[in-house]
Image (cartoon, rainbow, N blue to C red; front, side, top):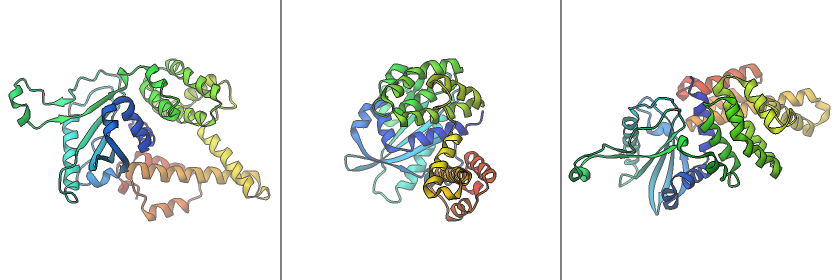
Length: 323
């Protein structure tokens, strides 16, 4: 299966430092208490000499007054990659190689593996495992924090909905995306009830966002859309993302003047939304938006070409592939 839906969704959710702080607050409370000033970094800077192995996000942070890094790695496969520890060490070395050019010390790196595959996780979180404890302090070690969604109850996650509903909805979607649609509907019912009770309009947008991801992974937009319609009680709320963009375009068109006509407003809103989405995905994936690429996006007003651009951006492994 194409990894792109997982990659894109993961990066859209966790590129926000506030959501990273929340993630740590739930799954690594001791780390959350010790760090502050989290900000997203461009991983291309630290892996330019090598092929990219994993789906990851890199953040700078402070531990007291010392610079440090947090790296969150997404592991979504149903089988375990035994080379994952090697890849973690490889990228730790790449981060240190770049960081030591500017610092007088080797900054701490906190590795976090975020796992939502179907198989059981059986790779130790501290490697190598030594039988002779006398050698412990002499042997090079790899440590990482494992967040295994298979080991977290739905109730525990749903209890956090009042803090950040979008975060909770996204994590629930990632946990259950490999299951059948009936199971997905069952686990989302408490979240839908929460949105309806609180009349939370933003919560509906978060549900659209999560079900759009589910539809991409399953390759069945209609099934996911019908599930959402059933959950929230009909077609009125369960518009697709494209329908939402069209409505936004309608409002924008009306604001600019009814004399331009409704159809022009619809088309303008849809085109603008597509352009914004392409630029957002480029920034999330690569951390930069070259000027020539931005100009190309802004001067393109054909919706089909923009659709093709978005697909190319989503599938690209390097910024050069888009250029």
